[in-house]
Length: 127
Image (tube, rainbow, N blue to C red; front, side, top):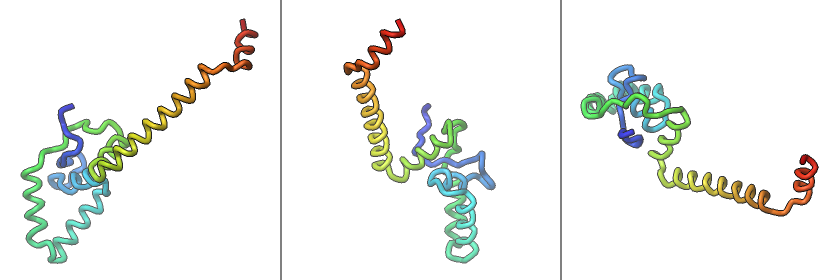
């Protein structure tokens, strides 16, 4: 897959208008409803006029649409949102998972290669 999973994309599948708020929600992991509410409140309160609508139009014009099938599962999407928010934490989590798998494999290997007389007796009784 040539599409970058850490890049910002417009989310046209969940879009209400151009997919900017849905893209921000997908990128950050925040619910799209809250991103839309924040954008409307900033615009209506006068704090964001004219900056929020201007930024919205610029992002809609400059960003690319999210490729279909970028994430295979919801867990995949959550993983990449975590990578974007804190890459060091996500690499530490991956290392931790590999350490756990390695420890479990070492336990299995130790059990398999050790002399287990009870297991050997059971195997002999089955012959």
